[in-house]
Length: 326
Image (cartoon, rainbow, N blue to C red; front, side, top):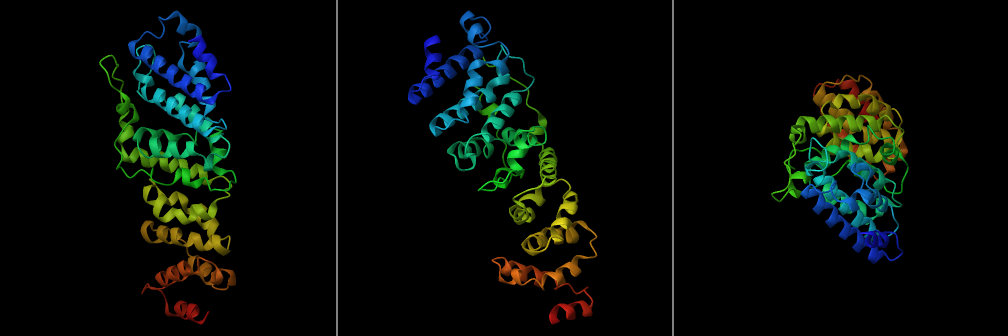
């Protein structure tokens, strides 16, 4: 074990990757058997409290290394420990999912250099976030409780961070797999409890809503991207879409492209959720005077929305005439 751990600290990346895979197998083997605390060599190098394990700490630290192969190996190793952490006889946990360790993994992931274009983020999203219900649930609870993750989401970046929170992982109820269940095998495993809220669509909608409302309270550099995704990828999954009213009216008052992109979502609130916004058509009339909108790449969307807004038979004739004249 001492020699293997020395390989983890060496400059040979291939040897380091092989070392961490070997240590992972040893760690999981002894933990499954309940012998983690009984092995004197393990007591020295693997502290009995899991969040202080030098091995796990080293693995998590590697997630932000420069070498992508090392990052991916470290992520997969850490996620395997997260998945099985609560089932070990030697570790104390009420549920199978190791949320405390998972928070550390996500915190390290968002601190990795060029994470938005890295392979490790693609692996995290493809193999875990889009695949498992419990990973989805605990991921969207992190930004509101961790001071290191929220700045990552709101900070200016070359690629907008909104696609981390929007994508295939919206709470549509289609994913029913748990990473903890998928990794549990063998007669020696202790059956840990599964939190019923992990499979409750309303609970997913609640934490999804809390996450987004908290996100929108910050000054975002990706407001156009957020507004473009709101009607189809965010609002249908919110527990209370009316909570977006302040954000949308403020965006509508900005003018230019921002106002145009806020149009659709604001109209959804008015039409489907009875949101009262008397100044809607007044602001819409003012947008027609903005020459930049009529030359922008969004002009087709603007005229499509304008035609939809003015198609109501309940609008007074003078209002329609004013728009036609403009």
